[in-house]
Image (spheres, rainbow, N blue to C red):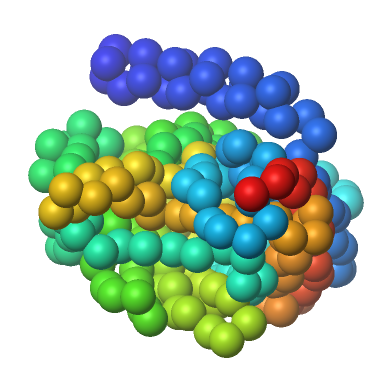
Length: 265
């Protein structure tokens, strides 16, 4: 338990510094019903070539709240489209299977799938049982390569909560290459029988590696016009905790322009 606490504290400190460093990162706020979703991100580095692609890592963060302070509906699905100036590559990367992460805590998940890791972060959730004060829980995020090819690939986002009982939560993200860029769909499992809702998350995604004597990168990008265009045409929340006066399902949609700096070459 002490080791897990130290891991969470270390990640919290690291990402607090990370968010401070990217204070100029783009973010947007979307509202529907009593839900307020804030999401944003940036690339590291921000200065990129106009034509050729260069390796990048992506910082992504989000916050889910309510306008009236009640327990938020549970995030269950998110669809994200990214323009053609971003490319993803999994060729030569080791693969982790969802079954390898089931019922494993963060340390055990890293032991079996550590070679497939693509990113790390931290998340908070609220567990709200009837007639009880909501419980705030903290969990490290670890992102693993779920396999695929140039046209279609998968990410496995692993978190582990200890309240009310120890449980691994594995979110599967299916990524498809489209003519206009990247199309990603994340399916978030039910948390604590429907009593749990994500409050916030932040993580860094990206990895440089070698394959057959060549330098490779999971993510690469270019910056021809000074901005990456991102949108969520569908983000679904469900009122699984049955909060009175809140719709059974809420769907949010919006767009985000992430700035970058074109460089010569």
